[in-house]
Structure formats: C-alpha cells, structure tokens
Length: 293
Image (cartoon, helix red, strand yellow):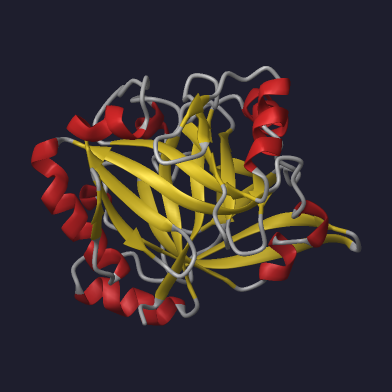
C-alpha cells in the first residue's frame, strides 16, 4: 500500500474570498469560518503569516479548500500570485499521508521534493474556543508541477478540522471524489508518469482519462484534445489547467434541484451526473456524481 492514501483536499485560489465563499454556499456547501495560515519555509523554522487564509467544505475524510489571498502581495511565501496571474481557480491539491517522514523520504529519494517536512498551523474556532490546528507538509518541486502548488500533508489535529458541525451539506456532498488536470497532448505521458511516481500508484486508462486511484478520491489527467469529451462546452484558459473537481453526493436529483434553484446553470456530465461550469464556480468546473464513499 502506498504511503499516500487520499486526495486530502483541493485548493481553489481567489482574490475575492467573500464572493467565492458566497458562491460555494449557494452551491450547497457548509463552509468553515475564515482561518489564516502560519507556516515556515524550512523544517523547524519560525512560523510566520503566509498571506492567505481559507474557508473549507469539510467531509470528514477530505475537503474542498477555498484559499483567499490577503494583503498587497508582499507576503506571498508560497508564490501563489504568480499562479493566479494565469487564471483564478484550482491551482493545487494536497495528497494525504499518515506519516510525513515516510512520505518525505520516498519523495526525496525519487527526486520529487527537497522541502523536508514543513510545519504549518492555523487558528480554528471550536465549540470550546479557539484552538491551533497543526499540520506537516512536504512540497513537490515547483519546477515539476507547473499546474500549481502540489504537496502531501499529514494532519496532526484532524479533529479540529473535521468538526461534526461542518460536515453536513445542503447538497448532500459526502466527499471530494476527483480532481481533473488537463495538459497538452505532448505532455500527457510525462505528466501521468510524474503523478504515478508522486502517488506510487499505477494509472488506469478510462476513455480519455488517465486515472490514478487512491483509497479516497482520484487524480484524473487528460490531454487537451479530449477535454470537450469530458467537460463539454468549457474553455481552456491556459495549459496545464486544473479544470475541475467532482464531489460525490447522496442524491443527485436533489443536489441538482438545489443548485439550479439557486440560480446556477447545469450541464449533463458524460457518464452520469452534472456540472456547473468554471465561469459560475469561480474558476474551476464543479461536478456532482452519485458515488459511494
């Protein structure tokens, strides 16, 4: 079994957190309150503000992260603003691991990371007051991930993140099922091979998709020539492009009724389900499928 066992969370970057959060609430998600990040560039380093804060749609096993950028840009240690200069939307994800040291050692030996194990924390509200959620992260080399900031993460205090009061969603979402990456046809083989090494899994072809399945969730990679087959009617603003994500829902018809009732246009998803396009979902298509956990 691989040391990485899930897509821990996707990361949607925004310079307008209020509007983005309101959009995802209208899409039927319960969001956690705003929480600002503190972190370090190096293992054991002093934690400092990261110029970003998040609100999340939490599911118990993984989640969607809306990452807002704050300030004038001078505080940007993750170099996020260079990513959103291409487009606002999905620019990264985090793969979950149980032991950061084990994952760091494997990624370093494979030539995929030199970050070491980095500390990260943010203050969160709990029914008993404010508490500090703590994480460990291993960043992939940015030169190897032109699509965005990709890392592995280990939760040291998962109970502070996945609080029961945030886990119920009006749209019936139960977990983040997949993230979709679109690449130039000429880059497909190398990109799939890279993610196979990152995740230590064997890709499986499913139509135009190359699927890397984890215990919870999957990474999907497609050539741009197959994009219209997967998300018909959508545009590609740049390549590589993290074009969308899929959430599993308990009742597809009920989810669609809610989403459409809140003013969103929906389109049928090939193979079942539906999606809201990137223009309405703040930069990345959001798909809904009935998928068992």
